Image (cartoon, rainbow, N blue to C red; front, top):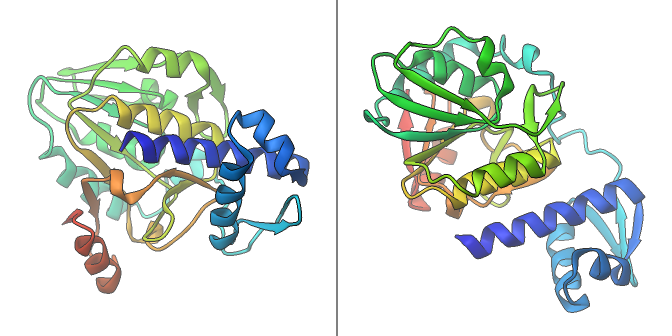
Length: 259
């Protein structure tokens, strides 16, 4: 798991550089990411195969925005989308928590629904979801908010401060919201900085990695790979999840809970 997370982090950084500069050489990427040019070429080949960039001799070009890619929405907009599905998913996910668990939770509206659904369970939630401080949570919950750089769009904390805090904590489980779930590309997000936070949470989890995602996220892809599906143990979704996609997830060994 650790090696696949490292590869995902490197490719996300590579994508951020390519998107920012528009065009970049293999040599420059090798210097910035401190890996060999052979590794850079292999990563570029994978990114092109995923439809994220265009390779050319000696480097790569950023694609124009793909209309099928999921754009970033502000958190308040997401909080009023697919409300009933998110409520059912949240209620079903509560059964995966035990008293005295320490749970990592990332940003996003589905995670907020989950936090609000937890009742009468002594759990400690450690999260970068800054919107959590405005939620009416059960008194049994001990909430710890990670510090760091605040992103207004997603109401989340990101950056080195958040990552350094996570390094010294081990969780019972990690619960993740996501912008997209794809068999080929894994979990994806529209925010590059949040990928490293998600990955740090997974690295420091000795229990299960649990994804909470409604049907609208299934077989969808956003801009940056957060995690490969090989890092995921459980996906909690709703009854509108396409049956064929559900079977493909199960064929990968992922437990799927329908709320």
